[in-house]
Length: 375
Image (cartoon, rainbow, N blue to C red; front, side, top):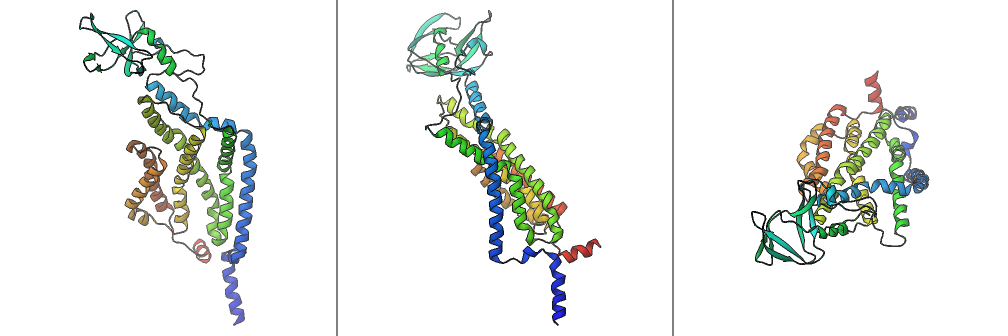
């Protein structure tokens, strides 16, 4: 009887390694070792990233600086690259639109249909109007009003009314060639680079962290299931990078263009702090990086027999609702178009996951069943 029991035990031992029967405290000790290794990887990467922290941050701030330039270009404010650059209406293409603020009181000439002066209208200082660039036959550019405009409640300025060239310097004053982000405290730059180095370290060590995560999970799997380690780690790394790249190159620039464009059109100057911007773009990049892991998790669970394509198709309506909730949380704007930019790839990834589940799904088998099937 004891021999039979021993034989029965020997039959089960090959299905899992020795760590699968560890006690709770032994599991905690294994977790501690894995966490220490992860912390060591992150610390080493942190030291390297600290040396390149300024370059990493300059790379991360490119989307918002481009959005600031685009917002000013859309508003018609020429943006240079140094304080020595000078604004010139002559450099702008015909029909370029912009906001123009009068620096002083000004009497605008009101013309009739034949171009003769019939009256004048007093425009007070700090009045902002919409104008556009018009090039004359001789090639010289000038600013003219772009829309009908009521002044002093009794005079209407027609589109095409010329703005006196002596006032163009006001646009140069509105120009901000220095688009650097702001650090409001003395220690702000130091604290910022600490966070940049830390997040960059997590980003670059992600494959190693996934290896440690797999090493902790693997003892609970059958030997034939452990061969999924390489595909899992590779897919997880690739899809995480794809999510971060989508956030950096597509999702965030669209949101930033929208938000800064609203401010510029309202004749407001956004004061973008470096710390707030970094937290925002990190939230979006890491959030979308994790969301893009959907196909990876589906592959893993489908191979284990825990997820089926039938199940995913059955709950697709609920999944769409959850996707839009996640998109609303990740998107820094509340408008529908930008929210769709975040939601659309997640919807595509969900149905891609359905296809992955359909291709790779199989009922979970014990090691004995797997060997019997392969023999």
